[in-house]
View (spheres, rainbow, N blue to C red):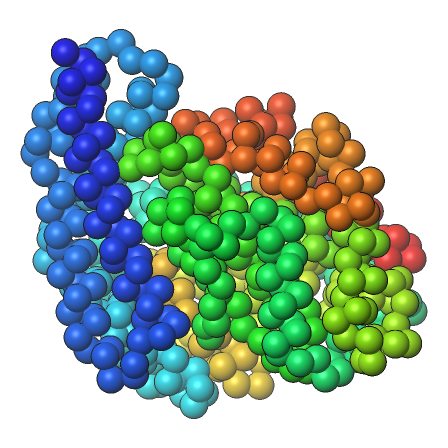
Length: 498
Ligand code: ZN
């Protein structure tokens, strides 16, 4: 009896997953190939799909099936399927369908408005859209939250189950106290990398070829995925056998496209690494946004910016670009890709300053959502706080509060998952290193053992555990910023000589 009920639940869950994949495909298309004039009809299509999805998730049949299964004794896997399906069902039931559709329609249009405003450095043009999205998000938070709960926390729970803004405040307080002096130490070091070697002329086609080579070596399956170009690199997992990643190329930037590819391929390996037998259930879904980000950051930074990785790949890179790299040594190159300096754009920030960018967004969003900060005061607030944290002031809003696409998507309370991802990544990387001896393997160009290890320990588990439990199951200890700070201090101390 239980099996029959369970199978019916899984069939329903699979329909939801399939429909979400269709919506995801339209979203991917919007960022890659959609003609400019299709924006309006696309926003209607997205709103329609969001409404259909909502109906499916809140269907009373799912509630009935869950209620029956919750009385049964189930295996750990099936219990996790029931637990997570219950979570999304209850969450979605709290939201009126009209609000869900309105959010999809508004954010689809807001993305266009944001892209134009950023290009023209015109914050007032985006401000009314930001007001509108914020207002909708406040309504969402009100429906989802418990009495007295901060709106931020109600939204955060969607991305990082079990995480609270109080925990994040503690995390960021600690990181700020350690990162600000570390940045100062690095900036005042006499040792400086030759960054101009990365800014010579590097043909786009060759960059793409090299990026594809590395992604393939990482184990990204191009028969179950694609690589395209978009303004903002991203990864869209439509199904384990259909994972789309993007990057962007600039001829005067050798490594921007590559690290974009490694980052998104890290996300992509997670999506491709789900157990197909569980497809359609939460066991073939990412544990959390923070854990997803740990996979991309681990590949991009801990592997892609390591000395041992370039021991193998630098000679190859030179074969791709013999002339511009003729006078560059491996040591020069590794130092250059690990340059640290205060900069304005988060996605281009180095590993050390990166989390200060996130900290700023955490504070800004909490204050915007609670109306402590008004949209019209945002640019000034942003620039003041940025200067306080990083010692430099953005010259315009494209370099400041207009730089990220997230708010136009309605992604509030999302940014801290990047910092959680960095912390999880360092902890998971240290555990993998202990078991596999990564330096020796990477130096030989062996990336697959790490992919296999991650697949077994993280990817294939899906949502079996909550994020904190998963980190503990993989590394033997609960999540902590300790391994991340240890990693940064060791790596940058060696590079900059302190
Ligand atoms: Zn990412």
